[in-house]
Length: 185
Image (cartoon, rainbow, N blue to C red; front, side, top):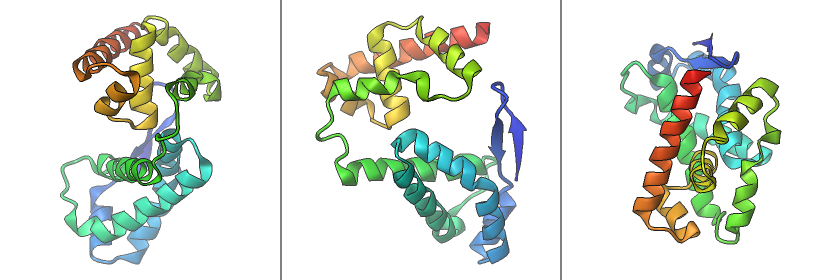
């Protein structure tokens, strides 16, 4: 496993699929190595979804437990980091469902997620703010609700009292605008 620089100067997680295969054979050393090398990235991803440090720690631990118990199901397709982060995302989504996290949360409270001041990387924050300027308010809201909270499009449609087709259209149109802006940077 190694890390590669991304466009934003941060490190991107890269995992050797053979490490997961070794874990499937109950290789404790392989599991220790995977945990040491990936725990930070898994925690950061869980934290970006859950927005709560303790919940993110729990999700990280659950992710590694799931990796250990499901490693025998892993089929190397050249993207082991995607497999790991998919497990993390699924665990976070399960957390949302089991905690009924959104049952008492209003759309106005979720809109506060749009506050990019929490992003410590000044350059990334400015880039995202500039990109978001090209989106209308509803496109920005749909993208942020989907990307940062893990809500499904139909859940967003229900919350915003919009047809699902409208939410999907706003998401697709907004993502296209964001891609065009990021390509120009």
